[in-house]
Image (cartoon, rainbow, N blue to C red; front, side, top):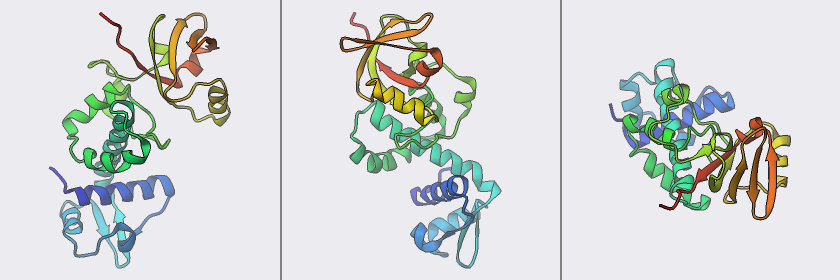
Length: 219
Protein backbone atom coordinates (compact mmCIF):
# COMPACT_ATOMS: atom_id res chain seq x y z
CA UNK A 1 0.00 0.00 0.00
CA UNK A 2 1.33 3.41 -0.95
CA UNK A 3 -0.56 6.47 0.31
CA UNK A 4 -0.66 9.74 -1.58
CA UNK A 5 1.61 12.49 -0.20
CA UNK A 6 -1.34 14.55 0.98
CA UNK A 7 -2.91 11.59 2.79
CA UNK A 8 0.41 10.91 4.58
CA UNK A 9 0.66 14.55 5.63
CA UNK A 10 -2.85 14.42 7.13
CA UNK A 11 -1.93 11.27 9.09
CA UNK A 12 1.27 12.95 10.36
CA UNK A 13 -0.65 15.99 11.54
CA UNK A 14 -3.29 13.88 13.26
CA UNK A 15 -0.67 11.72 15.03
CA UNK A 16 1.28 14.72 16.30
CA UNK A 17 -1.92 16.39 17.46
CA UNK A 18 -3.20 13.23 19.18
CA UNK A 19 0.03 11.95 20.73
CA UNK A 20 1.92 15.17 21.46
CA UNK A 21 -0.72 17.82 22.12
CA UNK A 22 -3.55 15.69 23.51
CA UNK A 23 -6.19 17.02 21.10
CA UNK A 24 -8.67 14.57 19.64
CA UNK A 25 -9.92 16.25 16.46
CA UNK A 26 -8.39 18.44 13.75
CA UNK A 27 -10.57 20.79 11.72
CA UNK A 28 -10.67 20.66 7.93
CA UNK A 29 -9.26 24.19 7.73
CA UNK A 30 -6.14 23.43 9.78
CA UNK A 31 -5.62 20.24 7.75
CA UNK A 32 -5.99 22.29 4.54
CA UNK A 33 -8.54 19.87 3.12
CA UNK A 34 -12.28 19.24 3.08
CA UNK A 35 -14.68 16.38 3.71
CA UNK A 36 -14.91 15.38 0.03
CA UNK A 37 -11.23 15.75 -0.89
CA UNK A 38 -9.57 12.74 -2.60
CA UNK A 39 -7.04 12.33 0.21
CA UNK A 40 -9.81 12.20 2.81
CA UNK A 41 -11.75 9.64 0.79
CA UNK A 42 -8.51 7.64 0.46
CA UNK A 43 -8.07 7.51 4.25
CA UNK A 44 -11.75 6.70 4.81
CA UNK A 45 -11.54 3.77 2.39
CA UNK A 46 -8.59 2.39 4.40
CA UNK A 47 -10.49 2.95 7.67
CA UNK A 48 -7.65 5.09 9.06
CA UNK A 49 -9.80 8.06 10.09
CA UNK A 50 -13.26 8.96 11.32
CA UNK A 51 -14.83 12.02 9.68
CA UNK A 52 -17.07 14.17 11.85
CA UNK A 53 -19.08 17.27 11.02
CA UNK A 54 -16.32 19.69 12.06
CA UNK A 55 -13.20 17.71 11.37
CA UNK A 56 -11.25 14.44 11.37
CA UNK A 57 -10.18 12.03 14.11
CA UNK A 58 -7.38 9.48 13.80
CA UNK A 59 -8.73 6.05 14.73
CA UNK A 60 -7.06 2.94 16.12
CA UNK A 61 -6.61 1.35 12.68
CA UNK A 62 -4.76 4.41 11.37
CA UNK A 63 -2.51 4.96 14.40
CA UNK A 64 0.38 2.70 13.29
CA UNK A 65 0.40 4.04 9.72
CA UNK A 66 0.40 7.61 11.09
CA UNK A 67 3.25 6.83 13.51
CA UNK A 68 5.28 5.36 10.65
CA UNK A 69 4.71 8.51 8.57
CA UNK A 70 5.97 10.70 11.42
CA UNK A 71 8.97 8.39 11.88
CA UNK A 72 9.91 8.68 8.18
CA UNK A 73 9.59 12.47 8.26
CA UNK A 74 11.78 12.87 11.33
CA UNK A 75 14.36 10.39 10.05
CA UNK A 76 14.44 12.38 6.80
CA UNK A 77 15.15 15.54 8.82
CA UNK A 78 18.04 13.83 10.61
CA UNK A 79 19.37 12.55 7.29
CA UNK A 80 19.29 16.05 5.81
CA UNK A 81 21.29 17.49 8.72
CA UNK A 82 23.64 14.64 9.73
CA UNK A 83 24.52 13.18 6.34
CA UNK A 84 23.82 15.78 3.67
CA UNK A 85 24.72 18.80 5.83
CA UNK A 86 21.70 20.82 4.69
CA UNK A 87 21.11 23.97 6.72
CA UNK A 88 18.15 23.94 9.10
CA UNK A 89 16.39 26.77 7.30
CA UNK A 90 16.32 24.63 4.13
CA UNK A 91 15.79 21.28 5.86
CA UNK A 92 12.02 21.26 6.37
CA UNK A 93 10.95 21.56 2.73
CA UNK A 94 13.65 19.10 1.60
CA UNK A 95 12.69 16.58 4.29
CA UNK A 96 9.01 16.86 3.34
CA UNK A 97 9.87 15.88 -0.23
CA UNK A 98 12.34 13.18 0.76
CA UNK A 99 10.15 11.44 3.35
CA UNK A 100 7.65 10.45 0.67
CA UNK A 101 10.46 8.70 -1.23
CA UNK A 102 11.50 6.61 1.77
CA UNK A 103 9.83 3.23 1.51
CA UNK A 104 9.06 1.12 4.54
CA UNK A 105 11.56 -1.50 3.38
CA UNK A 106 14.52 0.89 3.76
CA UNK A 107 13.57 3.16 6.67
CA UNK A 108 15.13 0.78 9.23
CA UNK A 109 18.38 0.77 7.24
CA UNK A 110 18.40 4.59 7.27
CA UNK A 111 17.70 4.59 11.01
CA UNK A 112 20.58 2.17 11.60
CA UNK A 113 22.95 4.24 9.46
CA UNK A 114 22.07 7.27 11.57
CA UNK A 115 22.76 5.40 14.81
CA UNK A 116 19.08 5.00 15.83
CA UNK A 117 18.53 8.71 16.62
CA UNK A 118 16.02 9.39 19.39
CA UNK A 119 15.10 12.93 18.40
CA UNK A 120 14.73 14.99 15.23
CA UNK A 121 16.73 18.24 14.77
CA UNK A 122 13.85 20.12 16.46
CA UNK A 123 14.19 17.94 19.58
CA UNK A 124 10.97 15.97 19.01
CA UNK A 125 10.99 12.24 19.66
CA UNK A 126 11.38 9.90 16.68
CA UNK A 127 9.00 6.92 17.05
CA UNK A 128 11.00 3.74 17.59
CA UNK A 129 11.18 1.02 14.95
CA UNK A 130 12.03 -2.68 15.03
CA UNK A 131 15.67 -1.87 14.32
CA UNK A 132 15.83 0.38 17.41
CA UNK A 133 14.48 -2.38 19.63
CA UNK A 134 16.97 -4.87 18.17
CA UNK A 135 19.77 -2.26 18.08
CA UNK A 136 20.85 -3.58 14.71
CA UNK A 137 24.45 -2.80 13.84
CA UNK A 138 24.38 -3.82 10.20
CA UNK A 139 24.89 -1.77 8.13
CA UNK A 140 27.39 0.30 10.15
CA UNK A 141 25.98 3.45 11.72
CA UNK A 142 26.99 6.84 10.35
CA UNK A 143 26.30 8.48 13.71
CA UNK A 144 27.32 6.84 17.01
CA UNK A 145 27.18 7.94 20.61
CA UNK A 146 30.51 8.86 22.19
CA UNK A 147 30.35 5.91 24.59
CA UNK A 148 30.61 3.47 21.65
CA UNK A 149 33.69 5.06 20.09
CA UNK A 150 37.19 3.70 20.59
CA UNK A 151 40.33 5.55 21.65
CA UNK A 152 41.70 7.61 18.76
CA UNK A 153 38.35 8.03 17.01
CA UNK A 154 37.68 11.50 15.64
CA UNK A 155 34.53 13.14 14.37
CA UNK A 156 32.10 16.03 14.58
CA UNK A 157 29.32 16.33 17.12
CA UNK A 158 26.06 15.60 15.25
CA UNK A 159 23.63 16.35 18.07
CA UNK A 160 23.06 16.10 21.81
CA UNK A 161 20.23 14.04 23.24
CA UNK A 162 19.16 14.27 26.86
CA UNK A 163 15.86 14.93 28.58
CA UNK A 164 17.75 16.63 31.43
CA UNK A 165 18.01 20.36 30.70
CA UNK A 166 20.63 20.80 33.42
CA UNK A 167 22.83 18.15 31.80
CA UNK A 168 22.26 19.69 28.36
CA UNK A 169 23.35 23.12 29.61
CA UNK A 170 26.44 21.55 31.21
CA UNK A 171 27.43 19.89 27.92
CA UNK A 172 26.95 23.12 26.00
CA UNK A 173 28.90 25.11 28.60
CA UNK A 174 31.81 22.71 28.09
CA UNK A 175 31.76 23.62 24.40
CA UNK A 176 30.17 20.36 23.20
CA UNK A 177 28.04 21.73 20.38
CA UNK A 178 26.87 20.37 16.99
CA UNK A 179 29.62 20.73 14.38
CA UNK A 180 32.51 20.74 16.88
CA UNK A 181 35.38 18.34 16.10
CA UNK A 182 36.29 15.93 18.91
CA UNK A 183 38.94 13.23 19.37
CA UNK A 184 38.58 10.36 21.86
CA UNK A 185 41.61 10.19 24.17
CA UNK A 186 40.43 7.65 26.76
CA UNK A 187 37.42 5.34 27.22
CA UNK A 188 38.02 3.96 30.75
CA UNK A 189 37.36 4.57 33.60
CA UNK A 190 35.88 7.81 32.23
CA UNK A 191 35.50 9.03 28.65
CA UNK A 192 38.05 11.70 27.85
CA UNK A 193 38.07 13.58 24.56
CA UNK A 194 39.71 16.65 23.08
CA UNK A 195 38.09 19.74 21.63
CA UNK A 196 40.91 21.81 20.19
CA UNK A 197 43.62 21.89 22.86
CA UNK A 198 41.17 21.29 25.71
CA UNK A 199 40.52 17.85 27.23
CA UNK A 200 37.09 17.05 28.68
CA UNK A 201 36.14 14.07 30.85
CA UNK A 202 32.57 12.75 31.19
CA UNK A 203 31.07 9.59 32.64
CA UNK A 204 29.59 6.85 30.44
CA UNK A 205 25.98 8.01 30.92
CA UNK A 206 26.81 11.51 29.73
CA UNK A 207 28.91 10.10 26.86
CA UNK A 208 25.79 8.26 25.65
CA UNK A 209 24.06 11.63 25.19
CA UNK A 210 26.72 12.93 22.78
CA UNK A 211 26.24 11.70 19.21
CA UNK A 212 29.22 11.86 16.87
CA UNK A 213 29.58 11.50 13.12
CA UNK A 214 32.98 9.69 13.01
CA UNK A 215 35.55 10.58 10.38
CA UNK A 216 36.92 7.75 8.30
CA UNK A 217 40.53 6.92 8.89
CA UNK A 218 42.84 7.66 5.98
CA UNK A 219 44.07 4.53 4.25
